[in-house]
Picture (cartoon, rainbow, N blue to C red):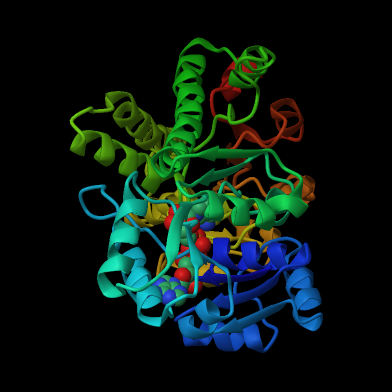
Length: 441
Ligand code: NAD
């Protein structure tokens, strides 16, 4: 099939590559000329395992191409996916200006007698599909189209496998012709397809992300109780998670959830519920627990070091999770900036995220020293904080780490290391929701 994706970011580019991989012809549109130039030159603007090879392979076989022209995309495709940003507004609601603009742009280039399915893949508030349809109709009276909601559930860091073998595909559609075309698009993926009305599909995405955030906040709240009692949150999580009704996934205590999706989607769902007159106070508490989790962690560092001003602190990890270069709304970045604000001298290392953290002005390289290896970061440090659980951090030469540090003290914000091993190697080791150093030694 001929498909167009408008917006070639984390969702659009990976979706485009995967659709091409299963045999569709895909044109990815973006209005960021720099991005289009890079993609046309074979450079991939984001890091996602497996993506680069897949893009090159499909460009070479002429199933994938890039353009800045919506007209080109819309003219040559039966199905048009929208994958543009839906950032939060100051009041927590969703900024839909990107979506509205794309709807107008599509209306501007749709030709009469040219039936198209316009698919919203961006995460949007319930009833956005209706607005998109109204907008296209308002700007193009003759357009023949249907609007479908097809929320995306990929996880950054494993977006390619997630898209190639999804748990489910949700198609929110009111028109049989559109549903049939969408089923053909997804046929090669052999995943379960759930067909719903448009509103339900839109709600599924916000409800799913809010539920996952709730699970994280739940175990983080439990981790505070574990710390107060000497219990071990990892054992508690295993004990809870072995119950099939609950499951172990997303019961990982840590610094809290971050990234470009969970914080904004929880906020959005709270705002949507409030606007509908059905307030969702449970999610407000989810947010508060998340904020408290980082506060409690920083308190722990401060308790151990007493005064943070002028302390040399090494931070491993800047991205919001491992295996991505995405630093948007990363808790690790918040942490770094809060340490800097208290006057600490922070040295940070991340395998993929440092460049974007600087480019996007999320950290100030004049205030945070960025290093090209984890060992370099710990040189002379009075404490090491593990902020993102990249696998390479688990496999470091810890005797060497200890030798290079001023004081061998580790704050493991993601419970990556084994407490006993760390303590046996001579580190003062703090984790989240696990027994404190004096309790174990
Ligand atoms: P992104 O910022 O990485 O990519 C969006 C792209 O859209 C950018 O390249 C931008 O230049 C382009 N764009 C903006 N306006 C445009 C226009 N008028 N015409 C053409 N291109 C335009 O964003 P993302 O992370 O891919 O997220 C996109 C949507 O998908 C959001 O609604 C997000 O909530 C949702 N989502 C994201 C993820 C994720 O993990 N990143 C997962 C599921 C859903």
